[in-house]
Amino acid sequence: METNNSIPKWVISSAVTDCNDVYKFAYRYRKPDRFTGRGKENEQAIIQGHLDDIARHGYTSKAHHDNIAGKILTYIPQTN
Image (cartoon, rainbow, N blue to C red; front, side, top):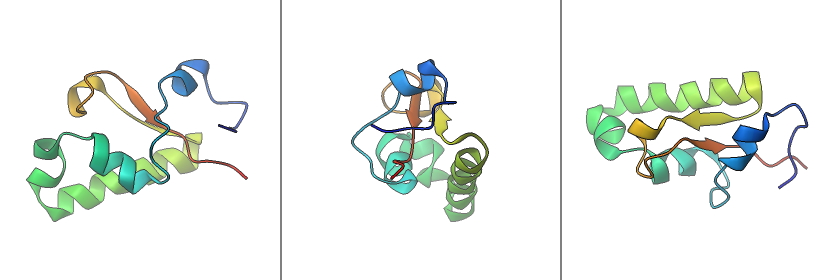
């Protein structure tokens, strides 16, 4: 995975590698009752938050209590 060198090591070590976009990351790893189960407006706000994180930091993350894995997960878009 080629990434921005300024991304912290903990982010890289917790990054998922089976998603090729932020939408798949959110739909695959977020708990449904805290994502799609709270209405379309909430779902869109969460996606926008992930996109804002990527624009600011180069990655987005999800805390352990909001995802199905039970640990911090990050998504880092591929750079070409």
